[in-house]
Amino acid sequence: MSNDNVKTMVDSLADGDNIAAQDAFKSALSDKIGSALDDKRMTVANDWLNAAHETEDLEQNAQLSDKPQDEEPVEIDNDEEPNEQPVVSEV
Image (cartoon, rainbow, N blue to C red):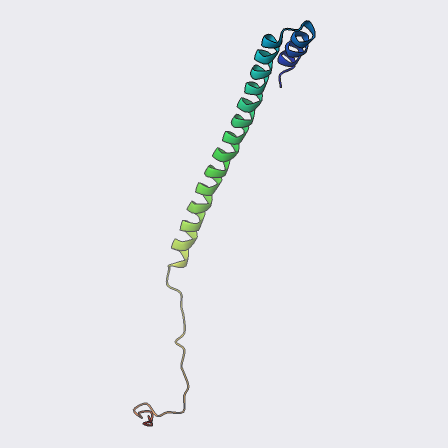
């Protein structure tokens, strides 16, 4: 709450002017809400920009990982001969 609005509200209450006190309270509350909204806007904008940078970094890393690497073929060793068919039993 703004100090001026609080002072006006207290003075108005002391003088018995409830309408002026109510107006001062509403002004103070509006200032407080406006300040909180501005802070939240800055936080959201900052988070949004950071998320965009993280997305760009991920895309760049993905492009780097798409490059072919020198890989050796993996040989699977099983007991079957290359042309031998597995035996299937009927039930």
